[in-house]
Length: 154
Image (cartoon, rainbow, N blue to C red):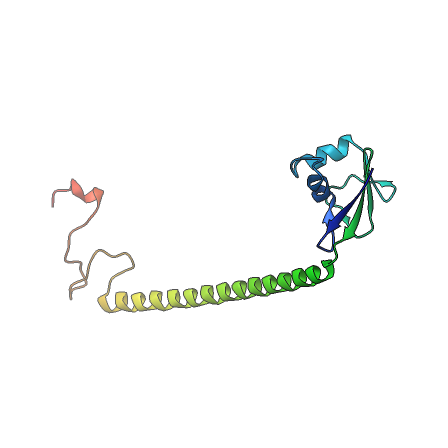
């Protein structure tokens, strides 16, 4: 029995054909189906599930023959799909560029913030992670902090 399969894109994969014709129920089954059952593409055995099937290709599965044919308005749909793909690619490129710019701005802001805190530490004569502001003598006016100091007798 011969059946014409109308497609609205430039091609479909062998897995898509097998699913569309209810030969398999999921894409994961294609690998095993093609290992167990011979599939002929234009007279030659085909076992690649991602094989692209184009207009006028003939696929034989068991006792059924499928002929791939473009739908009447397929040319318009293919052009529209290619334009949409180009738009998505441009949008993805813009997103990557925007993310890179955002990351560069964040890095510059971090550098400015670290420089501002370094200047404040220099003015207050404290070290990074210091406990408090030092007095004019250069000593810390607060006692030690943390678990090690909890039991100390000062």
